[in-house]
Image (tube, rainbow, N blue to C red):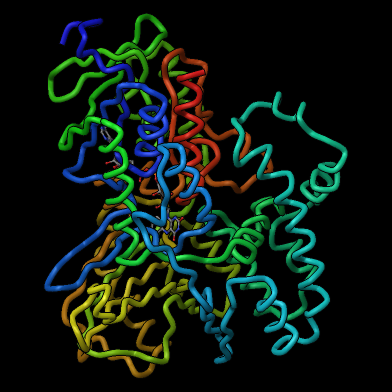
Length: 495
Ligand SMILES: Cc1cc2nc3c(=O)[nH]c(=O)nc-3n(C[C@H](O)[C@H](O)[C@H](O)COP(=O)(O)OP(=O)(O)OC[C@H]3O[C@@H](n4cnc5c(N)ncnc54)[C@H](O)[C@@H]3O)c2cc1C
Protein backbone atom coordinates (compact mmCIF):
# COMPACT_ATOMS: atom_id res chain seq x y z
CA UNK A 1 0.00 0.00 0.00
CA UNK A 2 1.72 3.27 -1.04
CA UNK A 3 2.12 5.98 1.58
CA UNK A 4 -0.55 8.69 1.49
CA UNK A 5 -2.91 6.63 -0.69
CA UNK A 6 -6.56 6.97 0.31
CA UNK A 7 -6.25 3.55 1.98
CA UNK A 8 -3.34 4.57 4.19
CA UNK A 9 -4.52 3.85 7.74
CA UNK A 10 -4.02 6.79 9.98
CA UNK A 11 -3.06 4.71 12.97
CA UNK A 12 -1.85 1.16 13.43
CA UNK A 13 -2.42 -0.56 16.74
CA UNK A 14 -0.09 -3.49 17.36
CA UNK A 15 -1.73 -6.07 19.65
CA UNK A 16 -5.34 -6.81 20.53
CA UNK A 17 -4.84 -7.01 24.29
CA UNK A 18 -7.29 -4.91 26.32
CA UNK A 19 -4.94 -1.90 26.15
CA UNK A 20 -4.69 -2.16 22.36
CA UNK A 21 -8.45 -2.55 21.96
CA UNK A 22 -9.02 0.46 24.22
CA UNK A 23 -6.57 2.60 22.22
CA UNK A 24 -8.23 1.52 18.96
CA UNK A 25 -11.69 2.44 20.31
CA UNK A 26 -10.63 5.84 21.62
CA UNK A 27 -8.87 6.65 18.33
CA UNK A 28 -11.74 5.45 16.14
CA UNK A 29 -14.32 7.21 18.31
CA UNK A 30 -12.46 10.44 17.54
CA UNK A 31 -12.55 9.90 13.83
CA UNK A 32 -9.24 8.16 13.23
CA UNK A 33 -8.95 5.37 10.70
CA UNK A 34 -7.51 2.45 12.69
CA UNK A 35 -6.02 -0.88 11.70
CA UNK A 36 -5.27 -3.34 14.50
CA UNK A 37 -2.71 -6.13 13.95
CA UNK A 38 -2.65 -9.11 16.32
CA UNK A 39 -0.20 -11.99 16.24
CA UNK A 40 -2.64 -14.58 17.61
CA UNK A 41 -5.82 -15.82 15.97
CA UNK A 42 -8.11 -14.06 18.43
CA UNK A 43 -8.14 -10.88 20.53
CA UNK A 44 -7.71 -10.52 24.30
CA UNK A 45 -4.02 -11.14 24.96
CA UNK A 46 -3.58 -12.28 28.57
CA UNK A 47 -7.35 -12.05 28.99
CA UNK A 48 -7.81 -15.34 27.16
CA UNK A 49 -10.13 -18.32 27.17
CA UNK A 50 -9.90 -22.11 26.94
CA UNK A 51 -12.90 -24.17 25.85
CA UNK A 52 -13.29 -27.94 25.86
CA UNK A 53 -16.07 -30.53 26.38
CA UNK A 54 -18.64 -27.95 27.48
CA UNK A 55 -16.26 -26.12 29.87
CA UNK A 56 -15.33 -22.48 29.20
CA UNK A 57 -12.43 -21.30 31.35
CA UNK A 58 -10.90 -17.84 31.49
CA UNK A 59 -7.13 -18.35 31.51
CA UNK A 60 -6.38 -14.80 32.69
CA UNK A 61 -8.31 -12.29 34.81
CA UNK A 62 -11.30 -13.31 36.90
CA UNK A 63 -11.74 -10.18 39.05
CA UNK A 64 -12.95 -6.90 37.59
CA UNK A 65 -12.31 -3.78 39.68
CA UNK A 66 -13.23 -0.12 38.99
CA UNK A 67 -16.06 -1.10 36.61
CA UNK A 68 -16.71 2.60 35.92
CA UNK A 69 -13.62 2.56 33.68
CA UNK A 70 -15.47 0.14 31.42
CA UNK A 71 -18.38 2.59 31.33
CA UNK A 72 -15.93 5.32 30.29
CA UNK A 73 -14.79 3.15 27.39
CA UNK A 74 -18.31 2.46 26.10
CA UNK A 75 -19.30 6.10 26.68
CA UNK A 76 -16.36 7.28 24.52
CA UNK A 77 -18.08 5.44 21.68
CA UNK A 78 -21.51 6.84 22.61
CA UNK A 79 -22.70 3.49 24.01
CA UNK A 80 -23.60 1.97 27.38
CA UNK A 81 -21.91 -1.04 29.01
CA UNK A 82 -25.23 -2.36 30.31
CA UNK A 83 -26.57 -2.72 26.76
CA UNK A 84 -23.88 -5.29 26.03
CA UNK A 85 -22.58 -6.82 29.27
CA UNK A 86 -23.96 -7.96 32.59
CA UNK A 87 -21.53 -6.99 35.33
CA UNK A 88 -22.30 -8.41 38.78
CA UNK A 89 -20.78 -7.65 42.19
CA UNK A 90 -19.11 -10.64 43.84
CA UNK A 91 -20.19 -11.09 47.46
CA UNK A 92 -18.26 -12.00 49.45
CA UNK A 93 -15.40 -10.62 47.38
CA UNK A 94 -13.26 -13.51 48.56
CA UNK A 95 -13.26 -16.41 51.02
CA UNK A 96 -9.91 -16.50 52.80
CA UNK A 97 -8.57 -19.76 54.26
CA UNK A 98 -5.70 -19.23 56.71
CA UNK A 99 -2.99 -21.70 57.62
CA UNK A 100 -4.32 -22.01 61.20
CA UNK A 101 -7.52 -23.59 59.84
CA UNK A 102 -9.74 -20.49 60.25
CA UNK A 103 -11.53 -18.79 57.41
CA UNK A 104 -12.96 -15.33 56.74
CA UNK A 105 -15.49 -14.18 54.13
CA UNK A 106 -14.40 -10.67 53.12
CA UNK A 107 -17.34 -8.56 51.95
CA UNK A 108 -16.63 -6.50 48.84
CA UNK A 109 -17.83 -3.22 50.32
CA UNK A 110 -16.35 -1.16 53.13
CA UNK A 111 -19.44 -0.96 55.34
CA UNK A 112 -19.98 -4.72 55.49
CA UNK A 113 -16.25 -5.34 55.67
CA UNK A 114 -15.93 -3.13 58.75
CA UNK A 115 -18.93 -4.85 60.34
CA UNK A 116 -17.35 -8.25 59.67
CA UNK A 117 -14.06 -7.08 61.23
CA UNK A 118 -15.91 -5.78 64.30
CA UNK A 119 -17.55 -9.20 64.64
CA UNK A 120 -14.61 -11.48 63.89
CA UNK A 121 -11.53 -9.37 64.71
CA UNK A 122 -12.83 -6.91 67.35
CA UNK A 123 -9.33 -5.83 68.42
CA UNK A 124 -8.75 -4.57 64.89
CA UNK A 125 -12.04 -2.71 64.36
CA UNK A 126 -10.61 0.76 65.11
CA UNK A 127 -7.44 0.05 63.13
CA UNK A 128 -9.50 -1.01 60.10
CA UNK A 129 -11.46 2.25 60.11
CA UNK A 130 -8.26 4.27 60.35
CA UNK A 131 -6.68 2.19 57.61
CA UNK A 132 -9.59 2.84 55.23
CA UNK A 133 -9.40 6.58 56.00
CA UNK A 134 -5.69 6.43 55.08
CA UNK A 135 -6.29 4.48 51.83
CA UNK A 136 -9.05 6.95 50.86
CA UNK A 137 -6.48 9.76 51.09
CA UNK A 138 -4.17 7.78 48.82
CA UNK A 139 -7.00 7.49 46.28
CA UNK A 140 -7.65 11.25 46.37
CA UNK A 141 -4.22 11.87 44.87
CA UNK A 142 -3.61 8.70 42.86
CA UNK A 143 -6.78 8.95 40.78
CA UNK A 144 -6.41 12.50 39.40
CA UNK A 145 -2.63 12.67 39.18
CA UNK A 146 -1.65 9.15 38.29
CA UNK A 147 -4.45 6.79 37.25
CA UNK A 148 -6.22 9.16 34.91
CA UNK A 149 -3.37 11.42 33.85
CA UNK A 150 -0.27 10.88 31.77
CA UNK A 151 3.02 10.39 33.58
CA UNK A 152 4.10 14.00 33.49
CA UNK A 153 5.17 16.19 36.40
CA UNK A 154 3.22 19.07 34.84
CA UNK A 155 -0.08 17.47 35.98
CA UNK A 156 0.95 18.44 39.52
CA UNK A 157 0.12 22.04 38.58
CA UNK A 158 -3.50 21.05 39.10
CA UNK A 159 -2.81 20.14 42.74
CA UNK A 160 -4.90 22.03 45.30
CA UNK A 161 -4.38 22.32 49.09
CA UNK A 162 -6.94 19.51 49.62
CA UNK A 163 -4.56 17.15 47.82
CA UNK A 164 -1.83 17.81 50.35
CA UNK A 165 -3.19 15.31 52.88
CA UNK A 166 -3.13 12.62 50.21
CA UNK A 167 0.37 13.62 49.20
CA UNK A 168 1.53 13.26 52.80
CA UNK A 169 -0.19 9.86 53.10
CA UNK A 170 1.72 8.82 50.00
CA UNK A 171 5.05 9.76 51.54
CA UNK A 172 4.80 7.31 54.47
CA UNK A 173 8.14 5.54 54.74
CA UNK A 174 8.74 1.80 54.62
CA UNK A 175 6.86 -0.81 52.68
CA UNK A 176 3.20 -1.62 52.05
CA UNK A 177 3.52 -4.38 54.66
CA UNK A 178 5.07 -2.11 57.26
CA UNK A 179 2.19 0.34 57.02
CA UNK A 180 -0.44 -2.44 57.07
CA UNK A 181 1.24 -3.78 60.20
CA UNK A 182 0.98 -0.39 61.85
CA UNK A 183 -2.84 -0.49 61.56
CA UNK A 184 -3.62 -4.17 62.26
CA UNK A 185 -2.66 -6.62 65.00
CA UNK A 186 -4.04 -9.94 63.79
CA UNK A 187 -1.51 -11.62 61.47
CA UNK A 188 -4.37 -12.94 59.32
CA UNK A 189 -5.59 -9.42 58.50
CA UNK A 190 -2.04 -8.30 57.84
CA UNK A 191 -1.69 -11.17 55.35
CA UNK A 192 -5.04 -10.29 53.76
CA UNK A 193 -4.07 -6.67 53.13
CA UNK A 194 -0.47 -7.53 52.15
CA UNK A 195 -1.88 -9.67 49.37
CA UNK A 196 -3.00 -6.59 47.41
CA UNK A 197 0.64 -5.99 46.44
CA UNK A 198 0.31 -9.03 44.19
CA UNK A 199 -2.41 -7.27 42.16
CA UNK A 200 0.45 -5.61 40.28
CA UNK A 201 2.96 -8.41 40.70
CA UNK A 202 4.92 -6.85 43.55
CA UNK A 203 6.38 -7.85 46.90
CA UNK A 204 4.45 -6.44 49.90
CA UNK A 205 7.66 -6.35 51.94
CA UNK A 206 9.34 -4.02 49.41
CA UNK A 207 6.64 -2.25 47.39
CA UNK A 208 5.97 1.32 48.61
CA UNK A 209 3.05 2.01 51.00
CA UNK A 210 1.26 4.03 48.28
CA UNK A 211 0.10 0.75 46.75
CA UNK A 212 -2.21 0.32 49.74
CA UNK A 213 -4.51 2.29 47.44
CA UNK A 214 -5.39 -1.10 45.88
CA UNK A 215 -7.25 -2.01 49.10
CA UNK A 216 -9.29 1.16 48.69
CA UNK A 217 -10.17 0.15 45.13
CA UNK A 218 -11.28 -3.34 46.15
CA UNK A 219 -13.34 -2.34 49.19
CA UNK A 220 -14.80 0.92 47.89
CA UNK A 221 -15.64 0.09 44.30
CA UNK A 222 -16.12 -3.64 44.90
CA UNK A 223 -15.09 -6.82 43.21
CA UNK A 224 -17.06 -7.63 40.06
CA UNK A 225 -17.53 -10.37 37.54
CA UNK A 226 -18.78 -10.55 34.01
CA UNK A 227 -21.65 -12.91 33.26
CA UNK A 228 -20.49 -15.48 30.76
CA UNK A 229 -16.89 -15.17 31.97
CA UNK A 230 -14.26 -12.47 31.52
CA UNK A 231 -13.67 -13.40 27.90
CA UNK A 232 -17.18 -12.10 27.17
CA UNK A 233 -15.73 -8.69 28.03
CA UNK A 234 -13.09 -9.12 25.31
CA UNK A 235 -15.75 -10.24 22.83
CA UNK A 236 -17.93 -7.22 23.53
CA UNK A 237 -15.07 -4.72 23.49
CA UNK A 238 -13.91 -6.22 20.19
CA UNK A 239 -17.45 -5.89 18.80
CA UNK A 240 -17.50 -2.26 19.95
CA UNK A 241 -14.23 -1.59 18.09
CA UNK A 242 -15.65 -3.20 14.96
CA UNK A 243 -18.82 -1.07 15.17
CA UNK A 244 -16.54 1.97 15.12
CA UNK A 245 -14.95 0.70 11.93
CA UNK A 246 -11.64 -0.58 13.36
CA UNK A 247 -10.11 -2.95 10.83
CA UNK A 248 -8.60 -6.07 12.46
CA UNK A 249 -6.07 -8.52 11.10
CA UNK A 250 -5.24 -11.63 13.12
CA UNK A 251 -2.24 -13.98 12.70
CA UNK A 252 -0.26 -10.82 11.97
CA UNK A 253 2.91 -10.77 14.04
CA UNK A 254 4.53 -7.38 13.54
CA UNK A 255 8.25 -7.86 13.00
CA UNK A 256 9.46 -4.27 13.19
CA UNK A 257 8.31 -0.73 13.61
CA UNK A 258 9.83 1.54 10.96
CA UNK A 259 11.32 4.97 11.68
CA UNK A 260 12.45 7.92 9.56
CA UNK A 261 14.75 8.92 11.19
CA UNK A 262 13.21 9.07 14.69
CA UNK A 263 9.53 9.30 13.72
CA UNK A 264 7.39 6.13 13.50
CA UNK A 265 6.30 5.73 9.88
CA UNK A 266 4.80 2.25 9.74
CA UNK A 267 5.44 -1.42 10.42
CA UNK A 268 6.69 -4.55 8.72
CA UNK A 269 4.39 -7.53 9.09
CA UNK A 270 4.30 -10.89 7.28
CA UNK A 271 6.90 -9.52 4.85
CA UNK A 272 4.76 -6.50 3.95
CA UNK A 273 5.31 -2.84 4.83
CA UNK A 274 2.30 -0.89 6.09
CA UNK A 275 2.77 2.88 6.35
CA UNK A 276 1.04 4.79 9.12
CA UNK A 277 0.72 8.23 10.60
CA UNK A 278 0.79 6.83 14.12
CA UNK A 279 1.62 3.53 15.82
CA UNK A 280 0.36 2.22 19.18
CA UNK A 281 2.44 -0.52 20.82
CA UNK A 282 0.29 -2.82 22.99
CA UNK A 283 2.73 -5.76 23.38
CA UNK A 284 4.76 -5.68 26.57
CA UNK A 285 6.75 -2.44 26.28
CA UNK A 286 9.93 -3.89 27.77
CA UNK A 287 9.76 -6.82 25.33
CA UNK A 288 9.31 -4.29 22.54
CA UNK A 289 12.52 -2.51 23.58
CA UNK A 290 14.55 -5.65 24.24
CA UNK A 291 13.40 -7.75 21.25
CA UNK A 292 13.38 -6.88 17.51
CA UNK A 293 10.15 -4.82 17.45
CA UNK A 294 11.90 -1.50 18.15
CA UNK A 295 15.32 -2.54 16.84
CA UNK A 296 15.30 0.07 14.04
CA UNK A 297 14.95 2.99 16.44
CA UNK A 298 18.18 4.99 16.88
CA UNK A 299 17.99 4.68 20.69
CA UNK A 300 17.34 0.92 20.66
CA UNK A 301 20.68 -0.26 22.08
CA UNK A 302 20.70 2.35 24.85
CA UNK A 303 17.10 1.72 25.92
CA UNK A 304 17.51 -2.03 25.71
CA UNK A 305 20.43 -1.91 28.11
CA UNK A 306 18.63 0.29 30.65
CA UNK A 307 15.31 -1.58 30.57
CA UNK A 308 16.83 -5.06 30.69
CA UNK A 309 18.26 -4.16 34.12
CA UNK A 310 14.82 -3.66 35.66
CA UNK A 311 13.34 -6.23 38.01
CA UNK A 312 10.38 -8.07 36.46
CA UNK A 313 7.04 -8.26 38.23
CA UNK A 314 5.91 -11.71 39.24
CA UNK A 315 4.31 -14.19 36.90
CA UNK A 316 1.75 -16.87 37.59
CA UNK A 317 1.21 -20.57 37.07
CA UNK A 318 -2.36 -21.42 36.10
CA UNK A 319 -4.02 -24.78 36.52
CA UNK A 320 -7.45 -25.32 34.96
CA UNK A 321 -9.32 -28.28 36.40
CA UNK A 322 -12.48 -29.76 34.87
CA UNK A 323 -14.09 -31.61 37.77
CA UNK A 324 -16.63 -34.43 37.96
CA UNK A 325 -18.26 -33.20 41.17
CA UNK A 326 -19.06 -30.03 43.10
CA UNK A 327 -17.44 -28.47 46.16
CA UNK A 328 -20.02 -26.31 47.97
CA UNK A 329 -17.62 -25.49 50.85
CA UNK A 330 -15.84 -23.18 48.44
CA UNK A 331 -17.09 -19.77 47.41
CA UNK A 332 -16.70 -18.13 43.99
CA UNK A 333 -13.26 -16.69 44.80
CA UNK A 334 -11.06 -18.38 47.39
CA UNK A 335 -7.58 -17.77 48.74
CA UNK A 336 -5.52 -20.37 50.61
CA UNK A 337 -2.65 -18.70 52.43
CA UNK A 338 0.59 -20.44 53.46
CA UNK A 339 1.94 -20.01 56.96
CA UNK A 340 5.11 -18.15 55.99
CA UNK A 341 4.13 -15.35 53.62
CA UNK A 342 7.51 -13.64 53.71
CA UNK A 343 9.20 -16.82 52.54
CA UNK A 344 6.85 -16.89 49.51
CA UNK A 345 8.16 -13.51 48.34
CA UNK A 346 11.77 -14.41 49.04
CA UNK A 347 11.37 -17.42 46.77
CA UNK A 348 9.47 -15.36 44.22
CA UNK A 349 11.86 -12.43 43.82
CA UNK A 350 15.22 -13.45 45.30
CA UNK A 351 15.54 -17.19 44.73
CA UNK A 352 13.34 -17.01 41.60
CA UNK A 353 12.41 -20.66 41.83
CA UNK A 354 9.00 -22.38 41.60
CA UNK A 355 7.39 -21.98 45.02
CA UNK A 356 6.94 -25.11 47.13
CA UNK A 357 4.05 -23.71 49.19
CA UNK A 358 2.53 -20.73 47.34
CA UNK A 359 -0.67 -18.87 48.11
CA UNK A 360 -3.35 -20.48 45.98
CA UNK A 361 -6.12 -18.44 44.41
CA UNK A 362 -9.05 -20.59 43.32
CA UNK A 363 -11.89 -19.20 41.23
CA UNK A 364 -14.77 -21.62 40.99
CA UNK A 365 -17.04 -22.04 37.97
CA UNK A 366 -20.40 -23.55 38.82
CA UNK A 367 -23.04 -25.14 36.61
CA UNK A 368 -25.48 -22.21 36.40
CA UNK A 369 -27.50 -23.21 33.29
CA UNK A 370 -28.05 -19.55 32.37
CA UNK A 371 -24.29 -19.11 31.96
CA UNK A 372 -23.33 -22.52 30.60
CA UNK A 373 -19.69 -22.33 31.74
CA UNK A 374 -19.56 -25.97 32.87
CA UNK A 375 -21.77 -29.03 32.13
CA UNK A 376 -24.54 -29.84 34.68
CA UNK A 377 -23.31 -31.54 37.85
CA UNK A 378 -19.71 -30.50 37.17
CA UNK A 379 -17.45 -27.71 38.38
CA UNK A 380 -14.41 -25.89 37.02
CA UNK A 381 -11.47 -24.55 39.02
CA UNK A 382 -9.12 -21.83 37.84
CA UNK A 383 -6.15 -22.12 40.21
CA UNK A 384 -3.44 -19.44 40.18
CA UNK A 385 -0.17 -19.63 42.08
CA UNK A 386 2.37 -16.80 42.25
CA UNK A 387 5.37 -17.75 40.13
CA UNK A 388 8.70 -16.05 39.42
CA UNK A 389 9.17 -14.41 36.02
CA UNK A 390 11.33 -17.24 34.71
CA UNK A 391 10.11 -18.34 31.30
CA UNK A 392 12.30 -21.45 30.81
CA UNK A 393 9.88 -24.31 30.04
CA UNK A 394 12.05 -26.88 31.86
CA UNK A 395 11.48 -25.05 35.16
CA UNK A 396 7.75 -25.67 35.02
CA UNK A 397 7.73 -29.32 34.01
CA UNK A 398 5.28 -31.21 36.28
CA UNK A 399 4.88 -28.21 38.61
CA UNK A 400 1.12 -28.85 38.47
CA UNK A 401 1.72 -31.96 40.60
CA UNK A 402 3.03 -29.75 43.44
CA UNK A 403 -0.12 -27.62 43.22
CA UNK A 404 -2.48 -30.62 43.06
CA UNK A 405 -0.85 -32.06 46.15
CA UNK A 406 -1.30 -28.73 47.97
CA UNK A 407 -4.96 -28.54 46.90
CA UNK A 408 -5.56 -32.01 48.36
CA UNK A 409 -4.08 -30.84 51.66
CA UNK A 410 -6.13 -27.64 51.76
CA UNK A 411 -9.42 -29.11 50.48
CA UNK A 412 -9.66 -32.55 52.14
CA UNK A 413 -12.81 -33.47 50.18
CA UNK A 414 -10.83 -33.14 46.92
CA UNK A 415 -8.87 -36.01 45.40
CA UNK A 416 -6.96 -35.27 42.20
CA UNK A 417 -7.07 -38.85 41.02
CA UNK A 418 -10.78 -39.32 41.69
CA UNK A 419 -12.27 -35.92 40.82
CA UNK A 420 -10.41 -34.53 37.80
CA UNK A 421 -11.89 -35.07 34.35
CA UNK A 422 -9.04 -33.25 32.61
CA UNK A 423 -6.55 -30.51 33.35
CA UNK A 424 -4.70 -27.81 31.44
CA UNK A 425 -1.82 -25.56 32.51
CA UNK A 426 -0.43 -22.14 31.62
CA UNK A 427 3.09 -21.38 32.81
CA UNK A 428 5.29 -18.24 32.62
CA UNK A 429 6.67 -19.82 29.45
CA UNK A 430 3.20 -19.66 27.87
CA UNK A 431 2.78 -16.00 28.81
CA UNK A 432 6.06 -15.20 27.08
CA UNK A 433 5.49 -17.36 24.00
CA UNK A 434 1.79 -16.64 23.42
CA UNK A 435 1.59 -12.96 24.30
CA UNK A 436 5.19 -11.71 24.33
CA UNK A 437 5.20 -11.02 28.09
CA UNK A 438 8.67 -9.90 29.20
CA UNK A 439 10.27 -12.91 30.97
CA UNK A 440 6.71 -14.25 31.28
CA UNK A 441 5.90 -11.53 33.84
CA UNK A 442 2.27 -10.47 34.14
CA UNK A 443 2.82 -6.72 34.64
CA UNK A 444 6.15 -5.75 33.05
CA UNK A 445 8.57 -4.25 35.59
CA UNK A 446 7.86 -4.78 39.29
CA UNK A 447 6.87 -1.87 41.53
CA UNK A 448 9.26 -2.93 44.25
CA UNK A 449 10.83 0.46 44.82
CA UNK A 450 9.53 3.96 45.43
CA UNK A 451 10.37 5.27 41.96
CA UNK A 452 9.17 2.27 39.95
CA UNK A 453 5.69 3.67 39.30
CA UNK A 454 7.23 6.85 37.91
CA UNK A 455 9.71 4.91 35.76
CA UNK A 456 7.08 2.98 33.79
CA UNK A 457 7.19 3.49 30.09
CA UNK A 458 5.19 6.63 29.25
CA UNK A 459 2.18 6.38 26.94
CA UNK A 460 3.60 9.16 24.85
CA UNK A 461 7.27 8.42 24.61
CA UNK A 462 9.69 10.99 23.27
CA UNK A 463 9.32 9.36 19.85
CA UNK A 464 6.99 11.21 17.49
CA UNK A 465 3.96 9.22 16.26
CA UNK A 466 4.56 6.36 18.70
CA UNK A 467 2.53 5.54 21.81
CA UNK A 468 2.51 2.72 24.34
CA UNK A 469 -0.65 1.12 25.77
CA UNK A 470 -0.82 -1.82 28.16
CA UNK A 471 0.09 -3.24 31.52
CA UNK A 472 3.82 -2.63 31.25
CA UNK A 473 3.28 1.04 30.36
CA UNK A 474 1.72 3.79 32.49
CA UNK A 475 -0.44 3.56 34.62
CA UNK A 476 0.10 -0.20 35.02
CA UNK A 477 -1.48 -3.63 34.79
CA UNK A 478 -4.94 -4.99 35.51
CA UNK A 479 -8.05 -4.49 33.39
CA UNK A 480 -9.09 -0.96 34.39
CA UNK A 481 -5.56 0.40 34.26
CA UNK A 482 -4.80 -1.04 30.82
CA UNK A 483 -8.08 0.40 29.51
CA UNK A 484 -6.96 3.80 30.83
CA UNK A 485 -3.51 3.20 29.33
CA UNK A 486 -5.11 2.71 25.91
CA UNK A 487 -7.05 5.93 26.36
CA UNK A 488 -3.91 7.91 27.29
CA UNK A 489 -1.98 6.40 24.36
CA UNK A 490 -4.80 7.43 21.98
CA UNK A 491 -4.93 10.93 23.45
CA UNK A 492 -1.20 11.35 22.97
CA UNK A 493 -1.51 10.65 19.24
CA UNK A 494 -4.51 12.93 18.79
CA UNK A 495 -3.52 15.96 20.86
C1 LIG B 1 -3.31 -15.43 35.01
C2 LIG B 1 -3.66 -13.98 35.04
C3 LIG B 1 -4.56 -13.51 35.97
C4 LIG B 1 -4.89 -12.15 35.99
N1 LIG B 1 -5.85 -11.72 36.88
C5 LIG B 1 -6.31 -10.46 36.78
C6 LIG B 1 -7.49 -10.08 37.48
O1 LIG B 1 -8.13 -10.89 38.16
N2 LIG B 1 -7.93 -8.78 37.34
C7 LIG B 1 -7.28 -7.89 36.53
O2 LIG B 1 -7.74 -6.74 36.43
N3 LIG B 1 -6.17 -8.24 35.84
C8 LIG B 1 -5.69 -9.50 35.93
N4 LIG B 1 -4.62 -9.89 35.17
C9 LIG B 1 -3.88 -8.87 34.40
C10 LIG B 1 -4.57 -8.50 33.08
O3 LIG B 1 -4.97 -9.65 32.41
C11 LIG B 1 -3.58 -7.76 32.22
O4 LIG B 1 -3.04 -6.64 32.94
C12 LIG B 1 -4.20 -7.23 30.93
O5 LIG B 1 -5.07 -8.15 30.32
C13 LIG B 1 -3.04 -6.91 30.00
O6 LIG B 1 -3.50 -6.21 28.88
P1 LIG B 1 -2.48 -5.51 27.90
O7 LIG B 1 -3.23 -4.46 27.18
O8 LIG B 1 -1.24 -5.12 28.61
O9 LIG B 1 -2.13 -6.57 26.78
P2 LIG B 1 -1.65 -8.07 26.71
O10 LIG B 1 -2.68 -8.91 27.32
O11 LIG B 1 -0.25 -8.21 27.16
O12 LIG B 1 -1.74 -8.25 25.14
C14 LIG B 1 -0.77 -7.82 24.24
C15 LIG B 1 -1.20 -8.32 22.87
O13 LIG B 1 -0.18 -8.01 21.92
C16 LIG B 1 -0.02 -9.13 21.07
N5 LIG B 1 1.31 -9.07 20.48
C17 LIG B 1 2.51 -9.24 21.10
N6 LIG B 1 3.52 -9.07 20.21
C18 LIG B 1 2.93 -8.80 19.02
C19 LIG B 1 3.45 -8.52 17.73
N7 LIG B 1 4.77 -8.50 17.50
N8 LIG B 1 2.57 -8.29 16.72
C20 LIG B 1 1.24 -8.30 16.93
N9 LIG B 1 0.69 -8.55 18.14
C21 LIG B 1 1.54 -8.79 19.18
C22 LIG B 1 -0.21 -10.31 21.98
O14 LIG B 1 -0.48 -11.51 21.27
C23 LIG B 1 -1.38 -9.84 22.85
O15 LIG B 1 -2.62 -10.16 22.25
C24 LIG B 1 -4.27 -11.25 35.10
C25 LIG B 1 -3.37 -11.73 34.15
C26 LIG B 1 -3.08 -13.08 34.10
C27 LIG B 1 -2.17 -13.59 33.02
